[in-house]
Amino acid sequence: MELTPRKEKILSSVVTGYVRTGEPVGSKAIAEQIGVSSATVRNEMADLIELGLLEQPHTSAGRVPSQKGYREYVDRLMRVPALQEEEKRYLDSMLAGSAYDPERLLLRASQVLSGATRYAAAATTPSGATARVKGVQLVQTSRRTAMLLMMSTAGTMKSRVFHCDFDLTSEMLRVFFRVFNQKVTGRAVAEITPAFVQSMAASLGQMYVLVGSPLRALLETAQDTRETQVYLSGQMNLLFYPELEQVGARRIMEFLERKEDLVGLLGQKPGRVTVLIGRESGRAELGSCSLVVARYGVGGQDAGALAVIGPVRMDYPKLTALCQYLAKRVGDLLTVLQREE
Image (tube, rainbow, N blue to C red; front, side):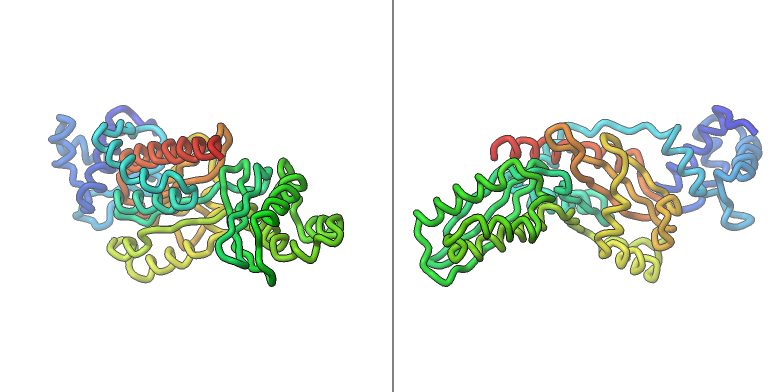
């Protein structure tokens, strides 16, 4: 059976009506919108049910979209609106205060996204699995402690505070800075392993007694750089959607806390917004919800993701526009930070 232009209009109207009200959409409301009789709409709806695009919860009720119907709508029928300039200025202002720190920026982006949508939101840091070390800095924080910072080509900046059993001097820190940067700048982060650090320590001769703590900090920052971190916001919002129910919402929240599983799910195609509807995620816990995932890039390279997690009944065009814009802004801000390091 062919999906005619009129059937497409009816499917779009049912999706938008159901998203707006949460109630099954009747033939009379659709007939008034598209200018045909209710009988014609009912016949077309019957065909859409046969095609698996609509469902009828009760005999006398209106129709609701099926997950297949949402997929058809997202792929072929929806029109993504442009954000208003006022909306863009507001979003920019919400990110501005965190623009100087990559991790704070991504946490803030997830908070902005959850606040704007009233759903759960996630942001992942750039993966450092293939990154190289851009440089190492050392900053004294007290008489016997200092902070080691590692900058990577992935746009990340990881830090560790280390403690020494002797008083640190500015001259010592300059020596540490010179030696560490000679050894690791330009090297793949993945190469900085315990074995590498041991060989590096052995090459330092008598200086090893001074750099044991800084070397451990170097290894730990490299390990942190390789890992993808996830920032979550707004999980409690999921409890307020009847279609998820409390038990379903709790299962979703438990899944979101499993960072490795979530990172794998957010690894979608670079440079686009991907919508995963219900069972498409391949996760039983997420069968009653959808994800809108936007990948962001840093310096022209795919880096991480922003995502919204909520019920299947969501305003996909608006969410797509919002995620698209925020991902672009986050990528631009991280690119600027990377160039300034």
